[in-house]
Length: 91
Image 1 (spheres, rainbow, N blue to C red):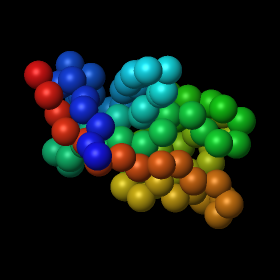
Image 2 (cartoon, one colour):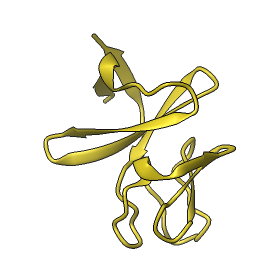
Image 3 (spheres, rainbow, N blue to C red):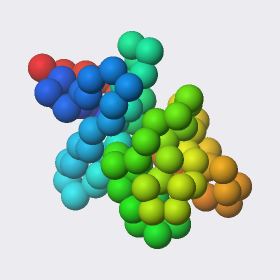
């Protein structure tokens, strides 16, 4: 099942946005013409990943600088990861 994302939530190139639906928060990343969506809440301390910086294929948690690969959901700290979602953009 794909997550439906309204086009107005798609950020500009090399930026992030936060999309909330039914109380669940998602971090949207736009990089090199592709859109990636992962959980917005860092599983470590609950920071918003959508407020982090993008470096390469990773988003840096603004609280403790942990690195999450937004293409896979994996984290630089092995036991933590976030869900990556398949999406469909809708108008």
